[in-house]
Each structure stands twice: as C-alpha cells, then as structure tokens.
Length: 245
Image 1 (cartoon, rainbow, N blue to C red):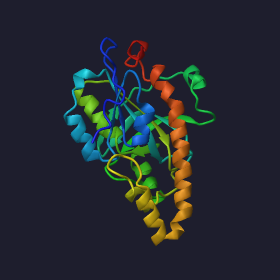
Image 2: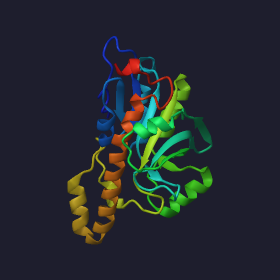
Image 3: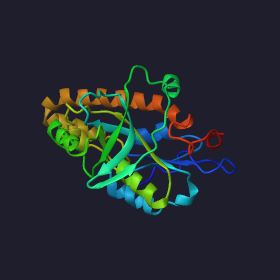
Image 4: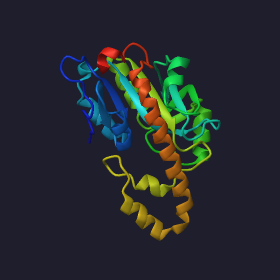
C-alpha cells in the first residue's frame, strides 16, 4: 500500500523528489510541494513492490526519511543521522551528504546532535540491545532502518541521486517492546486496540511502552525540524528551490 503522491509537484514545477518512509506519521511530515511520498508500512517486500511499479523518470532523486533505531551508543532519541552510505549484507551504496553549519543553525532541531554515519538496512526489526550491538560491530553503522537500503538500491539501479536522513527513536541501549512491533498496522500506523489488549494480558509492559512512546514522539519532533533540510538543499543540487516553487 502506498501513501503515495501525498506531495507531488504540479505541472511546470519540475520533477519532484521521491521521499521514502516507513510509517504514516513520517509520510505526513514529509508531504508537501515538490515531494512525492511513499510509505512502506515498515514492510520491505511492500516497498519493493511499490518501487517496481514506480516511474523513475518522474523524479529527480530519492531521499529515505524517517525514524531509525540507534546503533551508536552515543546517539540519543531525537538525534539526527545523515547517511554517508547505506549497507545491507555485503552491499554498500554511497549517499549524498552535503550540508553546512549554516543550514543546521537555521533548522529547527534544538540541541539535537547531527551526525554523519553509515545506516544499516535490515529486513526485520532489530528489537534489542544485543542485536543492535552485533549489527554495529558487523557494519560500523550509526543507525538502522528497514527502508534506506531498498531506496538506495533502487536509486543506484535507476541512476538517481540518493540521500538518507534518519532521526533516532529507540537508542542502542533500549529494546523495542514486542507489543509495539506487533501492533503496527498495514497502513503504517499503530493499532491502539492491539496495544490495549496486549497491556491487559501483560501489564508489566506499560513502563517500556511509555519509554518507547516518549522516544518515538521525540524522534518525530526532530523529524519535523529536519524537514527544512529538504527545502534548503541539504543533499546537494538535486533538491532545488525550483522544485519547491
């Protein structure tokens, strides 16, 4: 399913930038003039299916945009990772990384750390600190998500510029509750009834769910602040003022 064309450019505005997201909340933040947005619902197979039917000639570049799991123990929820490259298994894809201190100063990111680093792509959620530590050791990645490697592969295959910006939700030291993962709906939002039923069966899950919710809300707030990067050309020449006119 796609929350696609949430923000496609109109005729005469030039080709939009394709924004690849995993969750409905991320897609809503990204949507706007000059943007064509798709949401995978955190389902890699679904994202590949969407992209297989996508007309790559209709866009000027691709940005993977959303929240991520932290792998670097120095990064906290709300901190920002701009990908230098994306790695999945034995494959690596270079990413556009250009940004200036002036852009960061003007962006509404508060005191959040902005780091350049590797983003690891996975097919399933990495839920616990032990799994995150193993993935960081194997890849050197600062963050992990389920969309960037697919978007990067597609961009490379189609000869399009690619970039990724991800905001840390669950830090390296924190596990994602299984209940939160299981409650994800196909549209990319959380099913509150599944959460309530899960809590009824296991009330001890409440503290970890509350911590996860705080982390996620902090990440979404940071993502909103980062949206200005898309308009200010954070990723180089393929996002231009002409596209946002």
